[in-house]
Image 1 (tube, rainbow, N blue to C red):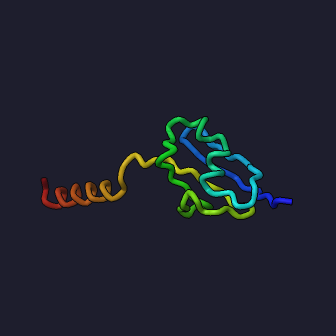
Image 2: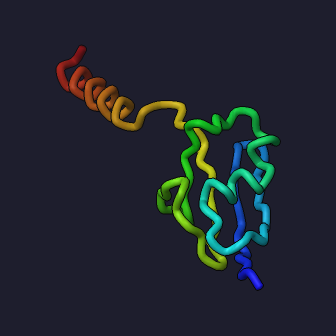
Length: 100
């Protein structure tokens, strides 16, 4: 008998969140769970070719194997690059000190 894994897949938008419980065959991957959840079909804003995935808040490779009880998380694309935002904030702070 093939072993099965109970896992969850989570995704959140500002207006709605999903938490889908799945029972997958042993050896299932992070990406396999994301695809099996049906969330990608329900959320056309997610680009299958550029998915950012994690397990319990830690980034995970799509082919990472799952363990019993794992929670796969699908991350939304960033609206702004955090490094660029920090750079702009620092630049604005310099202008404020110069009085400009």
